Image (cartoon, one colour):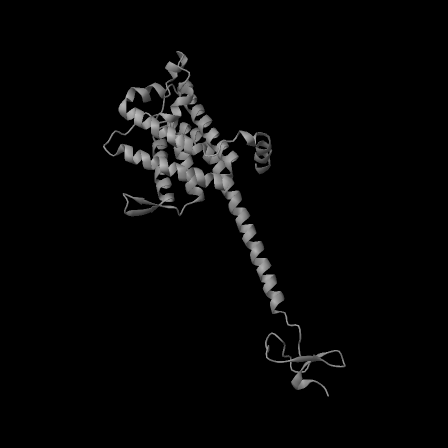
Length: 266
């Protein structure tokens, strides 16, 4: 996989957009604010296969920005803002781990896989899942948590919570929704294929490389330590050497052997 990705990066790397997830986060936040003011705007962006067939083709792209359920509580804008800032952190971290090009591919795959999942639901099951737009964000969350499980958030500004717990809880909710519906199970697997097929294998490969590198470093240090501890002079009479008895002085006798001064032949 690395060779294929490297080949693609050499050919198309100039097309990559640094900070792509950041830009998406800003658009998500703007869409949320518009939806809070006028819910019909969000409904005009959401995936609706019948309306797409009627000519509203922009829904094939805009659905990713407009989940069907938009919170309208008094603190909604604050939580949405913090969500945007979290995506900024996720963006910088993934680009550090993968590079800009591979992060762009991950996002593009996530969009296309969610679009494919929506089309499968419409054409095969003749239905549409709720909140299909959140799956791209969920895949980004899962990828970040996979690489940075110890990253800690302060829930309600007082409760420290590692990001892996939040990701696991999100995955548990999605998994439970799959148990009651084969349609949702198919949709979820397809929509999250960018995480399942790309992020997880890449993390395993990285972990394997880290273990191999750690073993090499440990072996090198062990060899260096061994070299440092190998005595240069060993007394042929008493066995003392310059490592175990650094205070002694050693000489080479006429017979070619090393001796400490105490046992040096006259």
